[in-house]
Each structure stands twice: as C-alpha cells, then as structure tokens.
Image (spheres, helix red, strand yellow):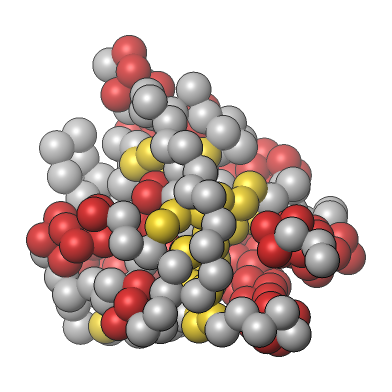
Length: 243
C-alpha cells in the first residue's frame, strides 16, 4: 500500500499541476495532533482556537500545505501599486484550489479507512473580531513549515507570498521537524523592516499589528470580501524565500 504521506503529496501536486503558472512547488508539513502547542494556542492568539481533537475526536496528525504564489505575481506586488489585480485574482484562485485539495484528500483517504476533517481556507471567520477559530498559519508553524515574521505572516523556505490549507486525519504520520531559527530577516539581523515601511494603512508596526486598521483600509478600497487586495506585507525580501 502506498504510504499515506506519499499519496497526500501526490494528490496536492496533481491538483496544482493545471495551475503551475500561478503557483510554485507546494510545501507540506505534518504536526502531531497532541502537540502541546495546540493546548496553548487560544492563549497565544488571545482568541478561541479549536484543538484538532475538538474537530476530529480521534485526530492523530494535522497535515498542512503551503502553495506559494508565482514569481510573476510577486514581481507585481513589489511594484509601486498598493492594490494589485493579479494578487487578488491569485488569492481567489488559491481559495478554490485549497478547497479542492481538502475535499480530494478527504475522499481519497477515506478509501484507506482514514477519517479526516477540513476547515475552508477562510472558514470560521469572525467578521466582528476578525479572528478565526482554526488558524492554518498557526498549524503551519507547529508543522515545521515556517516561522512567524515581523509582518505577522508565516515565512517559509519559499517565502511568505502564498496560501495555507490543512486537513486533520486520524492516521499517524511522523511530525516534521521545526526550524531552529527564524526565517525572518529582521528577527535574524535586525536590519529589515520593509513590510512595516510598505504597509499603506499604518496597521503594521515594529511592535504590533492592528488587524482592525488593516481591515478598514481594505474595506475603504472596496475589496470584495473573498479577495485580498493589498499584498504589501508580503512584498519584502521574504516574499519568495526565507532567510
């Protein structure tokens, strides 16, 4: 029988194949559902965050996948425009692709007798508090895919410009080793603050991030709720690679 992790990787890559002009090679990581960090997430994030076993009672592993945006899209957000059409289009496409990946993995793993549960790319989102009860980004860090940067995004070895998805399964897969150092250039050297300098809303500061101010800026630009119109915090040196 094909190893579950090999099958997971193959399915993700097959679904991304028709979209290779829009996304680069995916990164896949695995976290143990009983990782102690899941017990602390609500406290760390200062908002209710589900434990994997609140979503799937017999959860053993959280599978996380990152689909990095193409270099062409990254070049666009590195320009002078603050609202970039290609960024919004890729964001919307990524949501559809991530939903397809989640559903296909769920169906395929079922044939192995593996039960699973997924959360949509933007599911369980509280539009008042601007928080989510299942953070794909937090799971990405727990699964060793990357580290949080000054931009409050997860920086992977393929950068920060991209989208995360995850699926919880009741099969055991060896957890991915977490990086021992930050991928953020600022946290490593103290020299880079490009994300702060380029933030058009003033929401991102060296000491904090004001999600309400960021959201108000996007609303003011009449961005559709399923789109993301401003990629400035993803447009620094870490857009396409980690450090």
